[in-house]
Image: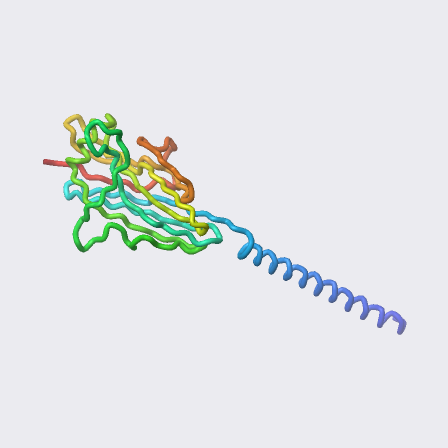
Length: 225
């Protein structure tokens, strides 16, 4: 090896190190700019609403619905109101609609826990439990509205970070009623996650998807009297 080759190899290694260092700097700068864009410039507002469980202690008149709110966007979201509902009419002759069920199971159990309004942080998940008293006889009377049974649903009001308001209403369960007009069980009438930032008004019987990983656990005991 000549004396000329030694500094030449050293210079080549030095230049390779500089190239790697420059590439790493460029990559780090690009990632930093992308992170800044995602955090402060690009707006992605998303809120997903998933009903995970519906439980109706028929003879006790206790209705419990668990709802998960997941925020996949990069802005905070607000859940203004969440409540169980029964497909009914307020008075004879009026068109049926989703009527909130607002009677408490007991003074010690809140209608919504945690209380609304609440904030779902970007990238976060909040699980809300709805608890209400629903007399089985009231539900069974809805058989006259829909011959297939009585429907339970949810009403959810949301707001995105721009201040836009949204309301979604959707069936979550059908109370099965026998020929004697008694509740004998329940089955899910929702098999999908709902978008939280759209106005969605769905009447019974709900969606027509087959049971899947997003189908909630639904239970109701037989009504005896």
